[in-house]
Amino acid sequence: QQQVKQSPQSLIVQKGGISIINCAYENTAFDYFPWYQQFPGKGPALLIAIRPDVSEKKEGRFTISFNKSAKQFSLHIMDSQPGDSATYFCAASIYGNTGKLIFGQGTTLQVKP
Amino acid sequence: AAGVIQSPRHLIKEKRETATLKCYPIPRHDTVYWYQQGPGQDPQFLISFYEKMQSDKGSIPDRFSAQQFSDYHSELNMSSLELGDSALYFCASSLTGYEQYFGPGTRLTVT
Image (cartoon, rainbow over all chains, first blue to last red; front, side, top):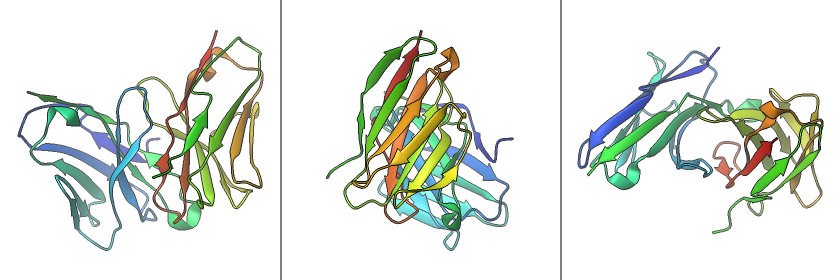
């Protein structure tokens, strides 16, 4: 059973457009929600993360929106660039539970020039 | 800035052989995590160590074992390798218990 569900599975966006990836979770004990970017054959790189006490966090072109009541969070990539083409994973963890990450299934993003 | 170091980067083994993967966490990080990522899949948690003690265990086969040493580096030992063990193995380290920084991974191929 996938504890963190991610959609869409793949996404094609034009250069300069907005990429939006969504995640939903069931376990209300999760208290940390990071997003990772992964290029083929490379390790996941931490992009941005949010705690449930805020509804939005922005770092450069990347924004996380968090809806605690709906148990959903999303990643927005503004002004998407071809270099953003990668696989994006949302994840969730519980601090008091050793912090192991539970990942979503991943979204393959292609940004067309 | 120093990153997580993993070795070897690539490993080819035959069925029933043994493999040892090594991980050197970011300096001063006290927690190490191991994840397995199959082709086209998300990383799956295997095991973690906090201050050299096993802190959590996930879907890790009994054929696998791991430990963290006094210098905080960790090793994942895999015995009786099966074809299905072919995957990318990532080590991640953390100081805060939240942010995890991943290494470049070890690609294990079992033939």
